[in-house]
Image 1 (cartoon, rainbow, N blue to C red):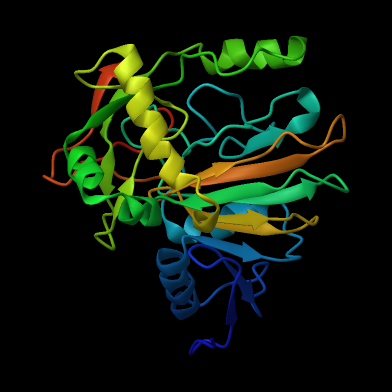
Image 2: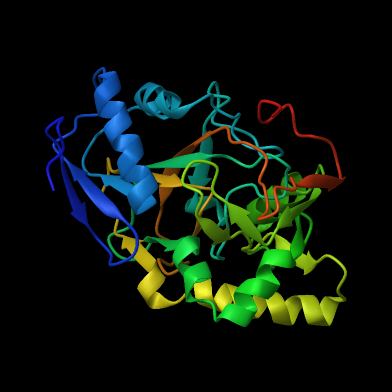
Length: 299
């Protein structure tokens, strides 16, 4: 597929993901080109730009083309001197080997995320990205009707893995230094495409109105549709690659399968809006503040 701006789109999965060929992100991008990339993002959900060799400034410049940036994270420190960049450093024992959508424990999660590879292991260390809209469409009708009515509480304060070392334990303490609990619709309506997607993932810990056991069972059922192999694209990193994904309608996972080898990515996220359910009701804070230090306040 060739666009009017001259770049090529090569699909990498049947339901999600594409490589963008013929675009150099290091220079100034024309508004028409940015519009084409944004359209490709809405269609494919995750875009891979190979061998870009950007520095921090270049990544920030590219991400800002899609909206105002968040700071690095609501609780975790940024790269020194770069308040908008989060280091994703597997060498410190901090490994997000669970399915999640970025920062859904706050009321206004990011619109989009960029990941840039700096150091990658010779094997393993891939990133998996799942299409939550395809997952919703896969649900049998009775489950879709149920999901449309449900709300889930997302939080950063839960134990999903025991820290492997003191660095990881310190990261865990920082991660929960401010506690957040936010109620989001289980089915989020995408604000630009109108698609419905399952808005759950690792931070979703309970269903509003249900007990722990019932919540866990329902979330497990819905999550199993998100992580079906046909809904997933696998990004095999090489140094200098950049991935842009729509955080409103995807989940991602970084398997911890590279032993003690180093792996370093930098993440920059674009500020989003408040999620809305199928009836238009907006997400709301259950515990914690509005995270205005992290993301611009939504109207």
